[in-house]
Image 1 (cartoon, rainbow, N blue to C red):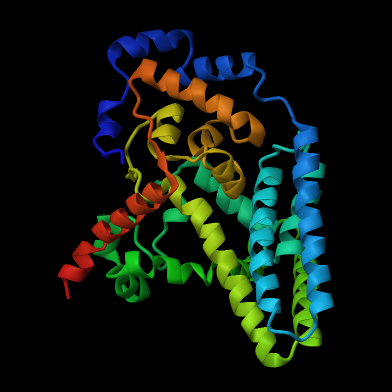
Image 2 (cartoon, rainbow, N blue to C red):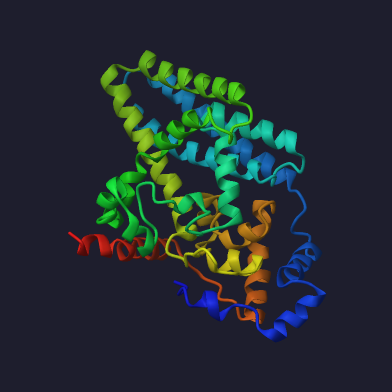
Length: 352
């Protein structure tokens, strides 16, 4: 794990400042990435990937209807939790314009995938995620590290009251159990956001959300008895939440937090607060390319299949600059994140 002292040690030297008169450190990396052709669209890749997800969704729905009122539906719930996770990753790529370069098709695809298929507001999530990308791990500006329930720094722990103070004492142990509620939490916040500024088309998004849940709950309680329907709901939504958390948590949790007043250029802000996850093709598919989190943060619109090559170029360039570049295995990334969560919760345990 990168220690927070690197935030100071990796700041530009006077010699580096002179070099920047001809361009920033990031602009040089950007030139290398562009010269390698890594920013061009990959329509065939996304056609195959999204087509496979669509077939998996159709197969899951068909299996659900065919099985009828059976406890075997819990296996369908497990499969559909994975499919929903892949739909979430598809919505993410659409929001970043990795699939289409133009706004309208990206937005249309995002609304259909997020609102109608997942039951999550595309507008609300995109607003939140854009702020995260602008200031990752910033205690005041990144909504992903706001102390809503969990605390992400000792400073947040010292100021915590109510539920965050209670949960924060044992948040490392509670993290995965809490993730079982993440799918429902996303839907709850989506409906809540319809009355705010983050959602530009509240009527359209609200209609799609209502349509999703009418189909979802209508299908559950039409095909299944109440007990089996509730069991399906618990398994499906619980595993869906764990899947999402397992994809997104390793990316930044446990990496340096940025306090107000810390000055970092774009490249260092993105690299120092992000963690890559190694693991080959299986991890690439499981995480939808977000295991290349450093490159994704530096080039958000880069198509997923280009991230692996970009990783090689970026790591080498960071070595040239002396900028710490952190990557580890999947299980190790979770250990680092949980260790950090336990550490920042220490003041709350000591105060009991």
